[in-house]
Amino acid sequence: MKPFLDAINEAPLVFDGAMGTTLYARGVFINVCFEELCLSRPDLILDVHREYAQAGADVIETNTFAANAIKLGEHGIADKVGEINRRAAALAREAAGEDAYVAGSVGPCLGPGQLWQESNRETVGSAFAEQIAALKDGGVDLIFLETFTHLEELKLAVEVAATSGLPVFASFSVTPEGETVVGIPLERMMHELESDRGVDGIGLNCGIGPSHAFEMIERALPLTTKPFVVMPNAGLPRQVDGRMMYLSSPEYFTEYGKRFIEQGVAGVGGCCGTTPDHIRMAAKSVKSLSRVKKHIEIRSLEPERVEVDVIPQAEKSRFSRRIAAGEKVTSVELLPPRTFVLEGLLEKARHCHEHGVDAINIPDGPRASARVSPMIAAAAIEREVGIETVLHYCCRDRNLIGMQSDMLGGYAAGLRNILIITGDPPKLGDYPDATGVFDVDAIGLTQVVANLNHGRDVGGKPIDPPTGIFIGVGANPVAVSVPYELSRFREKIDAGAEFAITQPVFDCDALFRFLDEANKHTRTIPVIAGVWPLVSFKNAEFMRNEVPGVEVPDAIMARMKQCQTKEDGLKMGIEIARETCARIADRVAGFQASAPFGREEIALRVLGMLD
Image 1: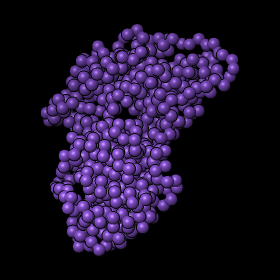
Image 2: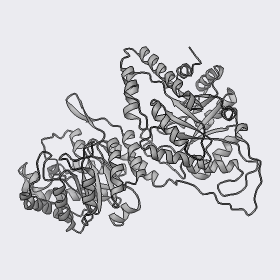
Image 3: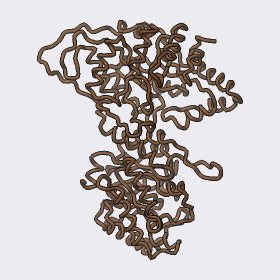
Image 4: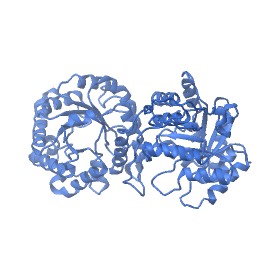
């Protein structure tokens, strides 16, 4: 394996997740010395390490967070520092094999409520020296100093670790306000660690969940040139039946992991509450992102120039014609079925067509279960029902040649409206080992389709006649990083996008702010607002807490909470959705209404087409 610093500077690495909370979840009482388990229960520690390694972690941390003489002394085993740390390193190395690095975990000697006293420097320094020497003897690849809150103690640990000759990463913990628990601002911690020659990399771990960690990253990254690692908790803990539980889902954790990497973080892992499931999904995301091309360059391979008649936007489809004319358009989102029998989907589409809906929106369904191909479903709807579709096309699952073939084949089958999305990495489900392709992202594929519309394939060869695909893209007005989302949105427009559909809109003001900024670009495109009718307070809680990129305002949560029955909840959700449509109508080109539980009549009621 290449040296660790070379690896983390070349591509983002995935660190493992929590050890302590994982052991607790497996029945280890909190009054047990977790580090001593390396000696008395090595099988248990090895199993946890192996699960993280199999989940895709590039870095396995030793179970030695509190394995120093001071902390072990509280359990009466201060004489076992060397034995525990060497054994811990061996267990991590066995699990890591030849495919992952081993980080020697070193936590603070001081407790959260203790204050740093200069008179204790020699004692604390000796404790760090003994532990780090044992970890080095055990064969770790780097020293990872983590969860520090006292700057003086962390700098002392760095000073000692630097003498080991191993790479040293210094990670600290802050509150949601951006200070350590003893009141040191994040900016001061960053300044001190950036200027310290003994520090090879900086980290932020524990204390906060993914959303707060993202805010801290935005403040921290401009202050360092060193690789930065972030390892947040799985959200903030909640008390459930007397136990503190971390309720953040792997999907939620992973969505933020993607944003961390997009911001420039060099390593992503998890702290308290994260599990192998969190790391498995995050690893797929990170490793997929590292292969995604931000743009694709179409080079001409033929010397001759091809003159083609480009199809005007207004002539591409009935849907595009209405948008070009400035008329409000409507669409209803219907998922392809989990069976090859299409009658139910066709009946729902027919119902929408009869009530005046302009198009059926066909999402590229989840890959964790068997569903009919969205393209086949869309073609069947257009052929059997006569209503146009807006087909989602995901870059995740096909290589570039396959995507181009699908664009040409779909056009030949009569599909004219395509919504291009990058797509998330495959999620956990029935096929947890499925992988993504990601030859290009939505920006790159938009450019490919725009070129097909102008008579050129991905290799620059002529396509005559050209396609006339109405190119749509996604937009998220409440993305984790709105500036980043706006930047990508502008790139999609420059690549050839002709319309956009947003994520579900609950915060109208956020949508207005997004549109105001987007309209400052040299070219604008019509934006269709996604609308999701909530069906219950539980549904509202799920959307707010577990679906990244969706913000449900407090006022809406309060209204949904008042509903006592399912009927009341659905009525209120439809009422809120209709109010949203009325408020944003003047700023958007139309609406895409979702159909919860496949009930298209709910979407029709939102659109005012059904009483």
